[in-house]
Image 1: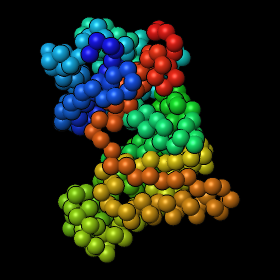
Image 2: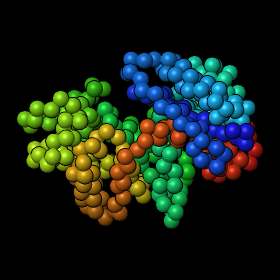
Image 3: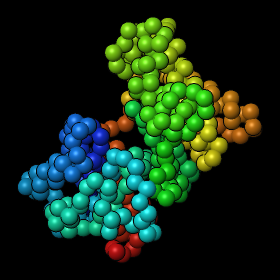
Image 4: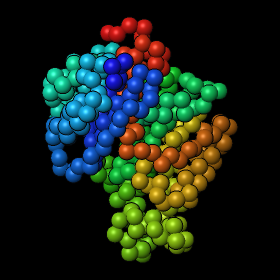
Amino acid sequence: MAAGAAVGIELGKAQVAVTILAMDGTVHAQKVTSTLPEVSLQRRLGIALGSVHTFIASDVLNPGSVLGIGLGVAGRHPTSRPDGDSGSVDPPGVKLDRLGRLLPAPIIWDNNTRMAALRYLGSSGPESPNACVLYVVLSSGVSAGIIEGGQVFRGRGAAGELGHICIDPIGHVCSCGAKGCLEAYIGVEAAVQCARGKGLAVEDLKALADLVQSGDAVALAVSRQIGRSLGIGLSSAVMLIDPLRIILTGPLLSLGPALVSAASEELRFRRRAVNLEVPDIVAEVGSPFDSSHGAALSALQRWGDTFLGGPTSHS
């Protein structure tokens, strides 16, 4: 690829993914590698570099054609960055010098969920291309990205910790030590514990999802209960940012339509109680490349000449 490319990399908790985009945003190549949770970020970067080496050796990627690199890194990144530029500061726990030597191009990095949110640029629809969209990942925790005006809102670097919105100040103890956090009610482990508390002998989320799919009444009740808790948490976020659309993705969606329906009903009730419009809720299966794809889009957005309103000259 000699005409120009952007490289996106995700260093996730359970995987390392690489996406190469052409200048027009077309996917040119992708590769994902599963990893164990205990693998260090530095080792994950090494796995990503191995994938990039493979692309270079097979003439899929020309290092000289890369206009920019986006990197999505699991974990919180509250480090202050001047003007949002992360190129001169390494993410906590990983050094980027080897990446810079392999691909001599500018680098921007951020939390992998916020990078994944960029994958859904334009999801507000052609009628409102710059409208606010809330992207939510329902997994072991609950993380989010906020898109507005074609950009991801970062705050001081840790925006999107939806899982630590309090929905019951005297409720369950969260892994963070505080009481009543949303993810203490709807995280994967919380969902399994809730099912066990109602008498279901389930070992993991898949077993619970299988019961839901079979129509088990107790499992469906658990799914709806989790959905209602999600709706309460979403309501808090929506009251603050007033998005046009909410995109839900992640493993918890395996609990079926009952979860999304219950969340929608709870959100609708709370919004209409104060005479406010209700945002659309869209359930997306998602892709293992969402974060790496979004990271590559962030590079195109920043350094592409015409893509997504990028600058007219490289910087």
